[in-house]
Amino acid sequence: MATAARARVAHLLRQLQRAACQCPTHSHTYSQAPGLSPSGKTTDYAFEMAVSNIRYGAGVTNEVGMDLQNMGAKNVCLMTDKNLSQLPPVQVAMDSLVKNGIPFTVYDNVRVEPTDASFMEAIEFAQKGAFDAYVAVGGGSTMDTCKAANLYASSPHSDFLDYVNAPIGKGKPVSVPLKPLIAVPTTSGTGSETTGVAIFDYEHLKVKTGIASRAIKPTLGLIDPLHTLHMPARVVANSGFDVLCHALESYTALPYHLRSPCPSNPITRPAYQGSNPISDIWAIHALRIVAKYLKRAVRNPDDLEARSHMHLASAFAGIGFGNAGVHLCHGMSYPISGLVKTYKAKDYNVDHPLVPHGLSVVLTSPAVFTFTAQMFPERHLETAEILGADTRTTRIQDAGLVLADTLRKFLFDLDVDDGLAAVGYSKADIPALVKGTLPQERVTKLAPRPQSEEDLAALFEASMKLY
Image (cartoon, rainbow, N blue to C red; front, side, top):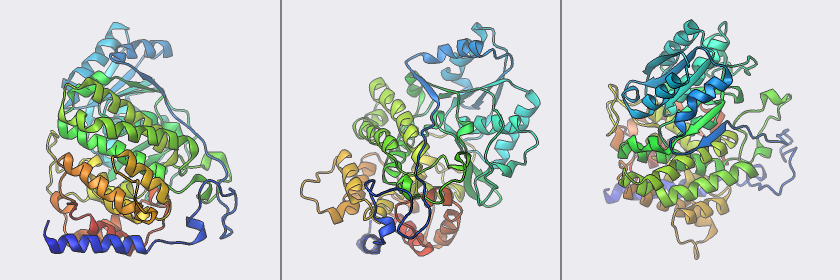
């Protein structure tokens, strides 16, 4: 990186760090009394943990047919994508369905990084099929598509935007009963097998948005580490970065009792509630696994121990962020993915430009955590230490810079592209990237520090180059 560019990034990061909001509302810890914030706004006083049942074990996919038999399923939809449909994970699942006499139909037209159009195609298939159960075999794209298909097939008179998050959609609560859905993750990143979230690109606005409701979470997640052996190195890395940011963001999110408004009815309490003592445990445990095993999992495709641990870490982080939420890395990642020009990630067999989700999330992480660290510096320093930093002599006010440097080293060691410029963006794209972040208020408002459009622009600029 040129000296002038490096100095510019350092200057931006120092500005972001110095400009931290020190008002009482944004400098609380859990010791504060919940209820009313000093500003007089009513904030939440409770949090809820919702998670799918999960079953872990090498070869556990063989049980899926018995599970469906136990549920009394008679007409099952098995969803996957074109690539996976030819690989062992799908074959194992189909063999189990056949062996247990379960009638099923395969839908293999899932799009990697789904869009509203690809969701609607799957929804139409599900509505015509009148299925009584679903099996999703794949990564987050497949599981999220299947959740949406199950939801709208169960609520056939709903408009597509009814359940989509506000402000893009209406964000209506889900009150209809859904069919059983068994998720079989084949990547180690999204944690979608544990959450009530389904993400897609809304093509009309060129932004990512989603559906978030506890009602759409899978009935059961079958976490089978044997499936991870089929992942190419860059897929392992980018999936792992999603786990990394899920853990970091949920642990540093605004605490649940500072989130407003306080729901008038439990059905309107959001799935993403803010950091809380239970999610914290899962986030930190997932982060320790990432620190210990991600590099091994990327570098050696036969390292079943490392890949197994990362498969579990994905679920652990999912339990954490599925109830606490994520914040700026994810909020800013959606336009990075949605506005992609010509970049095609290595190891992804797709016919369209693609910045993989995990990569789009992690590229802004050094800038983001420099920006947020003054709110909860102890938490930022704790995570830096878990990721390998020597923090014994670190001043608490330097927590963000230390975490940012630790992340940069971690990413450099794993051959990550050198910032947003390396995936096709320039300074001229920053206004569009900021515009694409603004509708992501469901997650950006969970950042421990509020952000202006100017802050977002500075964060994007600081992320153009990493090293």
